[in-house]
Length: 229
Ligand code: 5RP
Image (tube, rainbow, N blue to C red; front, side):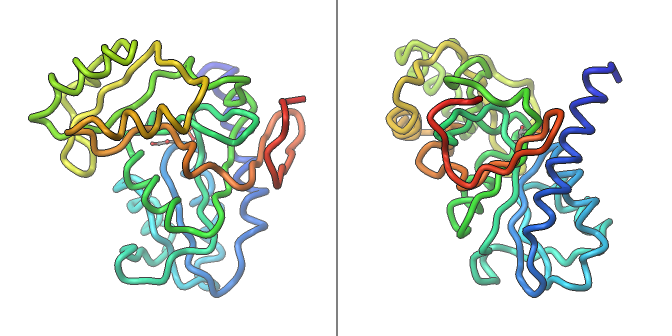
């Protein structure tokens, strides 16, 4: 691991540690996926006896949660979580995000949308003035792959199939670069309207409510800002 990766991992851990202070005994919590979430789950382990359990967005997070002695519930079997904790691939000052670098975007969006508050945890490299340097993950049903790619090209994007591996839902992922993010909500709706698309990684209609950013220090922003300082 490079020195930069080491630093990022320490920052992710620091963001996760601050997020942990928001966990309240007795509440089921929602949890996303990725390396920041992995740090969060590890730190959550000592609190396992104090919370009923967790709802998780990926099989990877489920494995980590079970290893941390946390009970894992289906979203169908419990009341919606009050708090949802997750990372992001990019986040703008309005707290709109691109997510899905770890392929878990659909379940993440479902649990985040069901939950009361979305607490986003990032290292400072994820802050952007405008979304779009990170290619947008789009989950599609396999038989629609070529059709969806052609529609994404008409939107001005350059789509690329992400290998042969399937998501936890048995679908394919397309990563799209070159899209226009001047109106992230409109882009999210437009990509979702292509038949065969299950979900896309723009989180603008369900943005984060709070943001924990770890750089040299850790900052906790409870509302969007006009720009990053
Ligand atoms: C997974 C995600 C992750 O939140 C995103 O990729 C950030 O991951 P990491 O915490 O590893 O930087 O959306 O689908």
